[in-house]
Image (cartoon, helix red, strand yellow):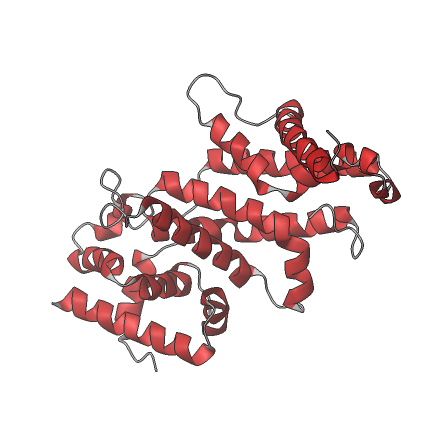
Length: 118
Length: 177
């Protein structure tokens, strides 16, 4: 059906040549992916899934869930790295953990509210 | 992804995600760049695409039945780009970027010099309706076939074939007017 001129399709291929991603993007993205992956593994290794039945144990495993399962936390870090004043080029585990802990604090408050534990 | 470790070991999933990332980073970035029109937004879109993909990777693998995941990845980028425009309530600033013309960003720069037709093709692509432009980006920048494009756009194979045909025809008219 696409009986357009072969030459025109050749022009289109030239016009839309693949674009190589910038090196700094690769470094940043791989750093972030490694951070969220490693932290989630660490946290999951430390906790038995059976402990999830007890709400008192939810907070620490939830750290792994939030970091490993939520792109939102990582995106906060990606944005933060773009600030002009000397933010590191790759987030440290501590950075990720700090963001996760803030998210966990909110999660804990919400959990207590839902359980009626004031 | 990390909470769903019942089907595959997480390390295995992470290794497979790593392969997906390495194989398709250039595809996602190319799509993002031609779709949004500047490097800054393209970088953001690429980052967000892979983070979303990581989050849903296990489920996507389960539901893909062994089919390639590139269309799924590009569909994530497609949806994120749509959200970007919806949030900003605007289209790209110009045929690509005001300060960094598309032609200066890849190896076609030298080719464009003295080749007005190629320059008109580049400008014409940006004038196409979104769905036609996206179909052409997927076909010519990423080398996707009709079936892959259909999956990425959520259309039937037949509708996609027609879409590409009309996109090329409209672009030819734009270029030769």
